[in-house]
Length: 268
Image (cartoon, rainbow, N blue to C red):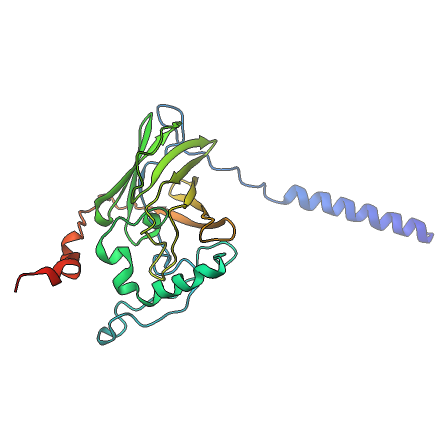
């Protein structure tokens, strides 16, 4: 057999083997299609919760001692991989100092300490569940922390009447994904206890996509030209609470913060 014939034979054998392996390989799984509401849109209703440490810090972070040393390991900061894509928030140089100052004094400055509404996207990944309820025209999202809620107005161009702690949410469906544009935020909300913050120019574009019956893929694209040099994104899975009696419990934390906020006004 000539050299050319041997090469041709080897190539043919490789092609035959490749075809055989391809035939044996499992087919790529089909994209999940959520059940439908009576209106024909994906049904993502239910009680959901994140399972990460993003409320401590949305960026990657090591374990740290808690704010009260006498409690030892209780309330220490758990380590986390972070949820920011690219692993770094693109702060403007002049904005970094404020983030650092916030983080150094979070036990008095963080709005969560005072039971203020957490804002978007933070409400999504606090260590408490939230519930999605769908109707033909609106989607209600209600959060266990502080009995907070917001209405997502679907396919609407209605204008926001004023800035709000949970912003102003306008939604639409893009095939299997719920897309929500959230604007008109109060600049007082933070992203986490590490002091990551924004201004009143914040815009958040959220995406909720069911990837199986019990998991949503959540993305939030953050834009704020006053604080960040470019848009950036965070993402995470959200898990359905599957207990037979799953429901949101009452957690009205205002009474827990009254002494912190108003104790100095008590008449002596």
